[in-house]
Image 1 (cartoon, rainbow, N blue to C red):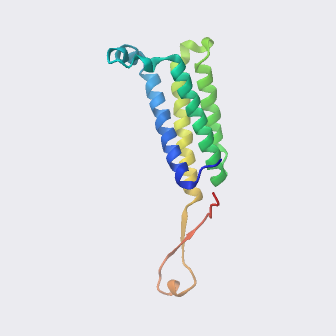
Image 2: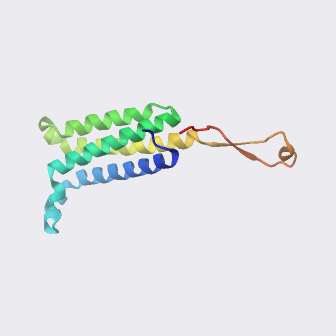
Length: 153
């Protein structure tokens, strides 16, 4: 199921926000390991919870990017998703434990970038072009808005 115009904007904003929170969580992990248990939020550092959150973020991004693609027909957003999924998957593997934080942060930032690009491309696809219409409005110098892309979603 593809998202309608209004929902796509909100899902991209939510996805970008969640991905940014994920990047901050990963970057601040050494500090959070000490601070969160002190305030009773140690469960937020649970490995399973992190994996579920990452899976949800990637799924939300895929859904958003496919819905956006149906509107703007630009496949560049999928490159960001591919990079993010690869980096995040590598960050979860024991062989790359030394680089876990940098891989996860870069993956999350790639998702943020993909959501922002998707939102930008969607706005561009629905850009309003102002043109002079050869009618009475044109004689008075008025500009009339014409929708450049009649979206069917």
